[in-house]
Amino acid sequence: MNNKFTTIILTIILIALIIGGIILGGAIYNDFMGTGTDDEVYKIGNIATEEPVQKKSTETAANITQGISTGNIEKEETNLSSNQDNSISRYFYEQLAGNSKIIYDKLLENKNNLKQGNYKIELKNTFKDTLSQEDGKDQLGKDYQTAIEAFIHDNPELFYIDVNKMYLNIETTTKFLRTTNNVYISAANGGTYLSNEFPTTDQIVVAINQIETVKNNILNSLSGTDYEKIMKIHDYLIDNIEYDSSYQAVGSYNIYGALIGGKCVCEGYSKSLKYLANEAGIKCEIMQGTATNSTGQTESHAWNCAKIDGIWYEIDPTWDDPIIIGDGYKTSNIFKYKYFLKGTNSFEKDHTLAYQFSENGKSFEYPIISKRDY
Image (cartoon, rainbow, N blue to C red; front, side, top):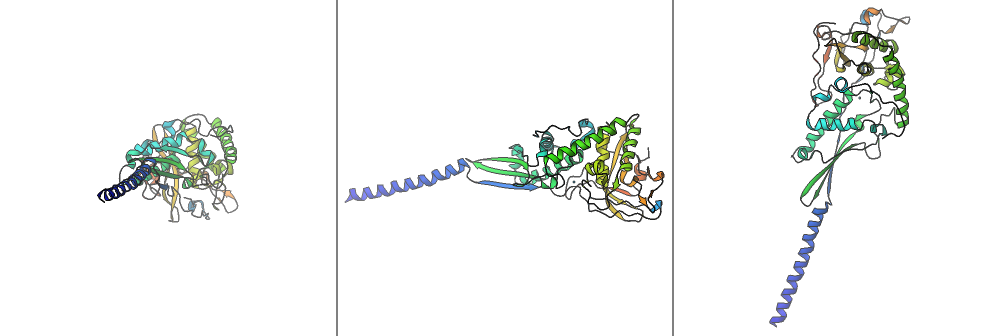
């Protein structure tokens, strides 16, 4: 009887050990193999986009008002900005640090691959220290936004990219008590981060070659001092661009609309001036904020600053562009240089800078501008 009872007790203990071993083993296996993955996606907010304001023409030149707006290829093609060196074209990059600089570098490294529209930029476990912190994912999301803002301001030739379609993905996996993160930049599943105006690589290649041809023709026509070069670029833009008061022209907000379509809003003017000036070896940056026109209306606006003879001055090619009024004749050339190479004493009368490119974004710095006009 005692032996039988002992056998039953031992059998129960053995069964319990087997079941416990299965449960424990399963837990260890799950932890080791990382069966659970925590995914988070960060999407950039609207960057440097402004609400369009209707452009107005009035009876007299003195009351001219200009509206503004708010963004491994197998084929062989010339590369935009081939003549830019880092000191000329990467002003906002120099204001980055840490994670933001790493992300910018990775975007720049894959700049040509972005033409595919769905290319996945791998950052893998680069940010493990940041992501190990309690608010690490949110912090990395902010660093990503800062990097994107600097990247698009430094590279106006990326007219075909819609950064609002780009996502920072953070995949977190735990294996045997060890957490790893897989970080990458991509489009939404099955989507693309190409703009709606340039949805295919073939279209992008054609557009790039068109812009390169125009750019080379302009550069080949330049000679003399930096002052003479920037003036010729300025004059080319306002002589060949019509302000897009419909806000519907292809490339209205970028260099394609300015240099190929001949129609754009203030972003197209300012991006093109930076692009061409940089290509000519002149430091030139995009500035943005608000401007108050002759009717007292304050509007979002974009313009430029350029470094001539070692000193920075401001330029507003949009507001220097004479408007066709009345019988179709343009206004006098005295208005053609009203906002050309001016100091802050002149510009601050009707232009106010905004240092953040997006809500709650990083406050960037601009060059120190001369108080006096050139």
